[in-house]
Image (tube, one colour):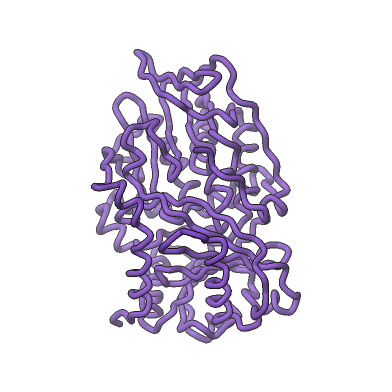
Length: 429
């Protein structure tokens, strides 16, 4: 089903606009891209800049999916895997290539913003991860050391330094990556579409890909009112995957993530909270995360084990959590509420797929889609251009549907109860 409209807040703040006509009749391209989120747009832009005739199909409008409705934090790391864990999981050579891509992903995003003058309230003041227990603070120190050892602008923050960055003494320490930041993701996605179109990518909104047909010299993609012939086909539909590529949707668990925003904070309150205008997300599995928009609202969010009546149930929970960190928020209202769908993999690592007949895609942003999608754009370009498997930054794998996917999809959020127990437990030093 089509994605819901983007958030009212991001729409209100967005100074980027984009529109494209649906596909009508026949069209041809070297490569067709299905999915007009950041992942698809980044791949299309990278391909076009490499001289590949590229056409992109979006089922709804640019930014209607999670790309335009996430929290807006730009974080050039993974959620669970630090560099040593990546090298262990992927092997030395592959892991090094993947880490180099990941480390450069925020640079690629902010460089793209600058190159195409994307007006998306981009702030590159850094990202901080506050540690909610002393054990997590020791983990943060190791995490910072691993990234710093690779040349990343990472540093450990003790409790005093964290309090200065955060505007709150609620945490035991943590770490900071100066390469991170935050954007209005809806405005960024629209601006990225404008950039791709400016480079020559043909974009069609309201053009859901309904059927793929393999032909002798490539593929034909059918929409309601047209069809595209192409040599190769890129499918990047993430958590909104359907039956277009059989089995793809069952390789990830789509999880609803909710975002909330306060009213505009009083100037004194806004100045005390995140005084350096960084983005923050803490060490809990059941995350506390927040940053400010350009007008002084605090944008946060959360998750629920049971989704029913989320609009009524979640704001009081988030209000209490934020109040424990920032007591000055007592009595502040949350008039903005929206959600998006994240593609989660069982091991929290992304997946790249490539078939011998020219079908290519990746999925599994695991909540780090803004920076990671920009980095993966060039990986997708390389996969389309025929770079050997062993030289790609992410190893192509066959589709591996999650066992009992239907049951897992329906019950995945109940794991949040387990994660909350883990959050309450200290970890060894």
